Image 1 (tube, one colour):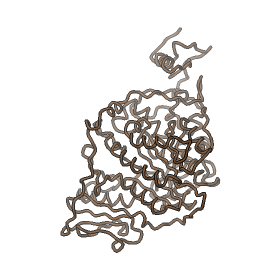
Image 2 (cartoon, helix red, strand yellow; image 1 turned 30 degrees about the vertical axis):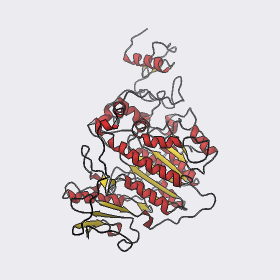
Image 3 (cartoon, one colour; image 1 turned 90 degrees about the horizontal axis):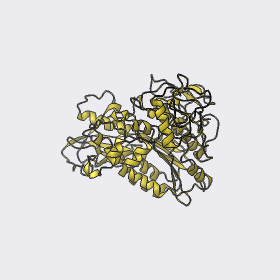
Image 4 (cartoon, one colour; image 1 turned 60 degrees about the vertical axis):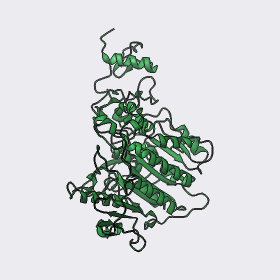
Length: 542
């Protein structure tokens, strides 16, 4: 009895399609379920989330089925019948001795100098600590030579004996959902599947399919994974001025950190903790991050590492500015290489996106006995063109580079390296964010942990058991701290985080318990407002 509307139809379809026996769903009542005595519509203002879950089935995170996606239809088209990314194989021009070119090395601190077209770099031309050299000649693509083994280390690392802590390689591919990875990263997923049998020897690769975002964009999710802190208040957290010791002036942010880290300047990243544990460290973005407001380092936490890729990418951005006659180059972090329709991805016969991978490989090869921690953010999927056919060509090209890199690293360094291969969130910008499928996918970023071959027993069993659990970047932060041997105390792990190698995550875990803000909760039994929005950046009321 009583009036019905479209919300009741929605509840009925949920009941039919998902076997859900709840009388109330999405503010409606299933026609197939009897309403509890005295029940009525949810009170006004409680349309997003009931804290802690409510109703039958609450306590188990059940996600909405993925709606049809235009990206899925696109990926079904054979690659030879749709646009492809520019090839870099023939992107090398023979040097001409009589041509005056520009060269740059870290020792010149961003200042380019004249050099002949056939210039090469060796011990005589490089300063101590120079980790790269660039040569840019008129009308030719810039040439890049990397020397990661020449880094002047600021860490005092320890060569361990029979039971060393694992090295950690944290590679983030920006803006890739779990579903997107399944569509556009087939080579990488096939390689991870080769190591998915975790009952034997060798590396153990586990896809954490239940991962949830804790915010809309990169900063929110990187901050969680790298510091254990949140951009939004969590019950029991402590307000902290994030960049009291960071380098970028005028960007003071308040974040919420676990108890024990209150006070100014206490936001420590995993890289800082790794240095305290006598790890060698490397950090890299595929942009010139100097002055950028869209990065966590220097804005939310200080960054001092043994090898930084920022000078390399700042010099590459400056070289592009020279080509443009310095038009639009006030901010190097805004420099684009080509555009969405006509990208310019090549440097010296290889994609620019391979430079961080080459630096990582050289860093691992140069220091085989010392523990290492590296974080690199790749942006191949961070593309939002209007033309659907151009949206995924860069990440599909990156798939080949990434798979080849990972195969070599797993073969040569997999015995004692823990790999984190993940994204921060799904697609979150551009016209595709208007699609309901993109909005649902956004909440489940692609996340994988590959345990080293030396890891045995409970760590493997627990990681496998957590494959479908509700987990977040906070959990990754705690897991990596424990894996590196960090103890408790200042910078202790979050109370809302769990060590994924130390114990199983309860199936009844809620978004509130996991530190997931209400409007980003992917669980249907907690969050009622699952309807399409105007975009993933439009926050529904809470």
